[in-house]
Structures are given as structure tokens and as C-alpha cells.
Length: 383
Image 1 (cartoon, rainbow, N blue to C red):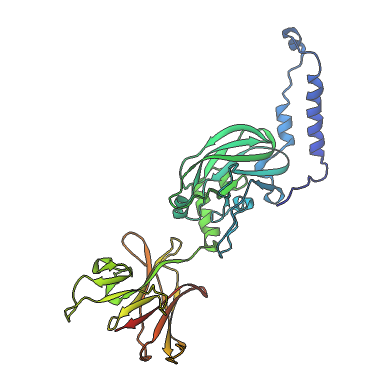
Image 2: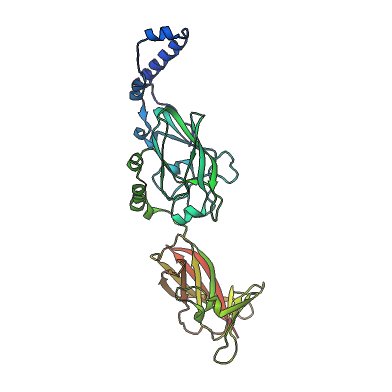
């Protein structure tokens, strides 16, 4: 957002300049002594100045100019924006985030005219959820500047709740925060501010609970959520736990191969594994006779209410010489994540039965969310 031009010269500005001019002229006279001070009428000009200035709470979000020393570039396909304006949109799922190499770490707001500073509510991290909040840096201390001059250093608690600061009730046009220290994130080194709010009723009332309720009721459902999956595996059906995760206690891993810890009814240990050599045509393989299933750990933004489509495709070998295959979808089903005891969500499904596609068939499974394929893998059976 570029620099904002000041609007037409207003009567309020004229009166303000007249009062300030009076002080300048008065200061140019001789320094008063104790005797002369007694002859000066007692006049308190502060209330008059206060009445001439608009409070920060009475300004408009649409009329301010936002400033920042940098902003993080979104390298995902989700459409996140980390610009300075994301800190004044009453939406905890968005945030201003600085670039990793930004040593200045400044966020600022220019009101376009001199105003009277008031209360501000600050959400000191990326507050889309409490998990995301903990994974990223949270602001611990920040220098407060009025019109380029240091006023004080603000200290924040490491809490997910919005925190409120009563700013000095001084005339000011530009307010800036310079981040000087953070509480480190558990996963990322991004430093963010979700909200710097001068306007909302819950800020004036210093009600952190009301701020959360507003977000949940008005914004959370529309928030961009980076739905993704991790560690997508093809495993034997008997290795799935009650919540859909892979039970590693049933198999020992040796390199890229897994071997069952107990013998089957025919007296040998079953095996499956990952294909890692350059001649492999699939990601995974299973011993013939095993039932196949997929399992995937879900990202922290996924909930048990999210609906996924699982698409199963088979590729019959059409030409032995060229290796050409005829691919066809043979099953599409919906699936919901399941929660394990530790709260981690997994998505899983056993391979649906299908007509025998013939020897040397390959299979592919795709995980689809809102028409987008967010993960896929392939497998075959070996004798």
C-alpha cells in the first residue's frame, strides 16, 4: 500500500494550528520568574486540545495507511496474504508476518491526521488456532513509537488471548511497533501479529473472550485452512489401528522393507515395503495375498468433520514390451479422519474389492479435498 495523501484542510486542523501557534509565540517571550508566574492567569488548554482531536477508536480503518519493514511471501498454493493490512481486519486467521531476514521488524499505522491515542488490542502471534499460535513465534517485547520517537517498551504475556494496552493519551499521527524479542515457535521461525485493533467494541471494553467469540462466530468458518496430509503409506490391512494409524509394533523395519513380528498361519513372516530403485513403477509393494490399505497423518488444521474423497485407480498391463497400461477408476468413496488417543488425526481406508485386473497390475490411491488432490501414492503386489 503506497503513501496516503492528506485530505482537504479542515476547520479542526485550523483550530489545532491556532492553539499550537499560541504556545509557540508564548514560548518566545522571556522566561517567567516566580513573581511573574503569579500574574499569569491560570488556563488549562489540554481539554480544548482533546476536544479538537479525534480519538483512535473514532477513526476509520478505511482511511489509514499501513506500514511495515517487510512482509512474508506465501510460497504455498493456499492464497495466504501476510501484508500489514492483515493485522487490522478483525480476523485472527490472518496476520502480518515479517520476512525471516528482517532485523527492523516494524509494523506501523498512519492515521492521516493528528489523533488522540487510546486503547489498542494486540494479538501477539499467528492466531488462526492455538496450535498454529504455538508453532510460530509470538511477540514478547516491542518498542512503541509515536511519530518516530520512542515512547516505551511494551511487554506481552505468552498467551493466546488478545492483550490490551492503554496508550499515552497524546496527540499522534503515526504509531509504530518495533519487535525486539519473541517467544520462539515450536515449529516455525515466523514472527507475526494477527491483530492490532484500535476500533472494536471488545477492545474498548478490554474483553478478550468477546474477541474470541467474534472470531469464531464471524470469521473462523471462512478462514483459509492449509489442509494437507503427511506420511502417506500403503500398509497391510491388519496393521491398521482403531484410529487408522499404522501399528509399527506389528512390523519391524529394515531399510525400505517391513517384516511382520509374528509368523502367519503358514509359518512365515509377511513383508511389504517402499520401492526405491529407479526401475520401480510404484511407490509401494506388498507381498501377494496381503490385503492393502492406505493411511495418512493429517495436518493440524484438519478436523473430524472434514470430508475427503478417496479415489482408487487400477492400471492393467496392456503391452508387455512397452509397459503401457490401461488406467481406470474403479472406486470413489468418502472418508472422515479419526482421532487417536493423543488427538492426532489419521485418514485411512482398506482397498475396495475389484474385478481381478490381471497379473502385473498397478494401483493408485488419491486423497481429494474440495476437488483438489492433496496426496497420492501407488502400489502393486509381488509374489
